[in-house]
Length: 105
Length: 149
Ligand SMILES: Nc1ncnc2c1ncn2[C@@H]1O[C@H](COP(=O)(O)OP(=O)(O)OP(=O)(O)O)[C@@H](O)[C@H]1O
Ligand SMILES: [Mg+2]
Image (cartoon, rainbow over the protein chains, first blue to last red):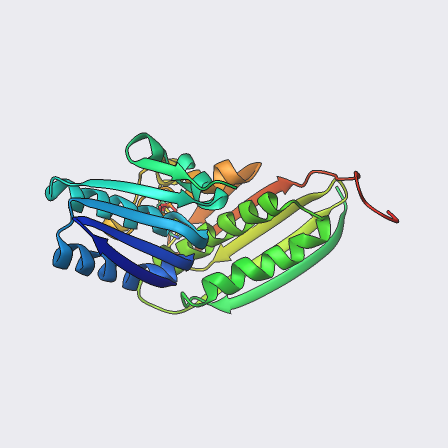
């Protein structure tokens, strides 16, 4: 999985590309934590538009990002979520806690 | 019920094999002509079960994971994923949403996802002997638009 980040006026956007499973999760988590710690954003957007697969390993990463943004008193949005990842997040009830925006098909 | 086809797969519990296992089972399931969504459901469930073997069953060793998939006459796929690892002492507790022994890196949602993405999920386990997960999903029959069927 590839991670691409862009920062604009207090908003940090992190885009995921490829498959987010347990194999990819550890390095993804440390990269995301590092980016948040460097940028200290007011708003974090996780852009999943190019994510071709995600399982529960992605949930742990999203929940971790949510906790970290709460500590920073900032906000988190999960955007452009493809159908498969959206189904995983819904099954886990994540969309009831965190703003999850489905990708337009 | 009779099955029309069967495949067996075994591989060692390295995380790089998670994507291989998903792809292999989904390539086999493709024989039932599933929709893209049905295929993604199967991939997701397989990923959860295989990850559990790697993370929980063999926490500090590399050992074998076994998958058997069968295609039945009524267009159902059965997927059996088995390990010879530590086992689960309380299966009902393990299946409950948000229960995890995996700490902050896991969310305790794997079984919940398998349950909601497949039609049925059965878990058998013996402590110190291993765990078997049996999942079934009926693939919708699609006739419309098929040429020469
Ligand atoms: N194959 C297995 N061998 C031993 N224990 C298992 C196995 N599969 C699951 N478990 C136990 O059941 C618990 C729940 O599993 P489940 O997949 O629902 O959540 P998780 O793996 O902890 O987290 P997530 O799947 O969300 O990353 C695990 O934490 C573990 O204790
Ligand atoms: Mg799991």
